[in-house]
Length: 131
Image (cartoon, rainbow, N blue to C red; front, side, top):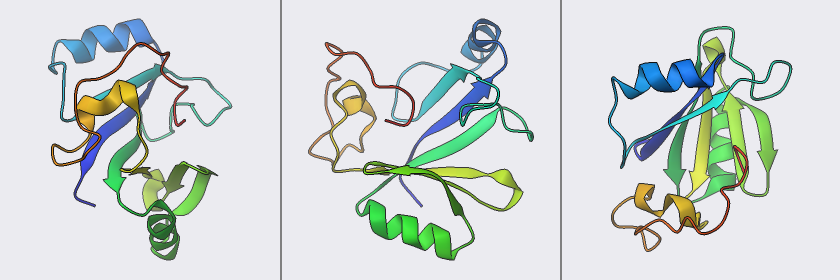
């Protein structure tokens, strides 16, 4: 894992957290902070270990990375055709992200050498977390 591009924070109060984190971190890439109001009883709940929900990183082969994580003890927590979140020892969750799947609103966060890197297209609504 070398192409980290975001961390996901599930916070108890989004307005407070945005105010607190916003005073300590700058906006923009290439590293992003994804933050949402935690929803208890769902996969978007605040983890018992704190607000760090997951670490996202780019991969060339999502199915192969999912198999590698399973073999390393990071069981599948959520999965789909373009989604894989794995939980490992200590509750740490990892989200390998397919570098070949265009996410127009996140183009500035793709690695600089990626053909999908560029100016974000925010004309469409961003999909729900993990989509």
